[in-house]
Length: 229
Ligand code: ADP
Ligand code: ADP
Image (tube, helix red, strand yellow):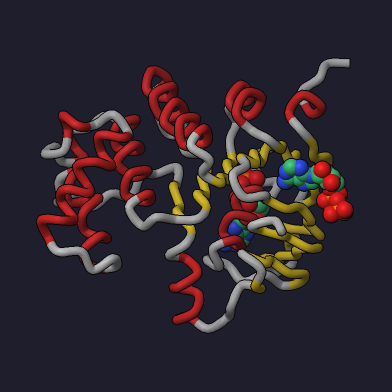
């Protein structure tokens, strides 16, 4: 069975329909890219995936079960989902190492030295072995985003949700973040990626979903979506 199933998902903000009957699924080990114009509902779908927003109709099933409604259960589901936003949202008064280690102590209940060792390894994995002591202000945007990815990975998520992870970056640091994401995909991480990076979608995605005005305009393998007639 797919890891995530969306069935006729609907979401309104007041009188505005942000999602107007979206159906798709995400298989384990696959990368699904959500593309389409700004305002078409891509980010709303991600926020409905980890229950940052409640849906108004239809269903989202994660690992076989509909998303729960109770806050305590939602928190448990969220621990299986890593989220990376456009803005990195690191803690400014903590080093890169402590940004990653913190959740390992508070959520994963690791001892402090164990958490630091694990955080060190995660930062090495995203190419930041020599920046562990830096505070966010002393890291480039691309480096901060890689810390954010390492922090999300620390929770050992079953799926990673990326919401325009490179949109706020200087052009010269976009590539290093996309490379980390591509390496994750090659390791078999299940990923949903909202992106305007069409070459990433074309090369890395297994499945591309094109949004328009809260609906799925088309979906298919990248060679089909990007073929030029
Ligand atoms: P159904 O309505 O039978 O669930 P879909 O319309 O969802 O079928 O998909 C039709 C076919 O498209 C599937 O059999 C599968 O091969 C492919 N497909 C759909 N979604 C994905 C996805 N997220 N990743 C890979 N292949 C997919
Ligand atoms: P995308 O990610 O494709 O750019 P979004 O999902 O962010 O699109 O937004 C879809 C639409 O829903 C937009 O028109 C946006 O203005 C609206 N929207 C998103 N969040 C809210 C909110 N909290 N309140 C009101 N409208 C919202």
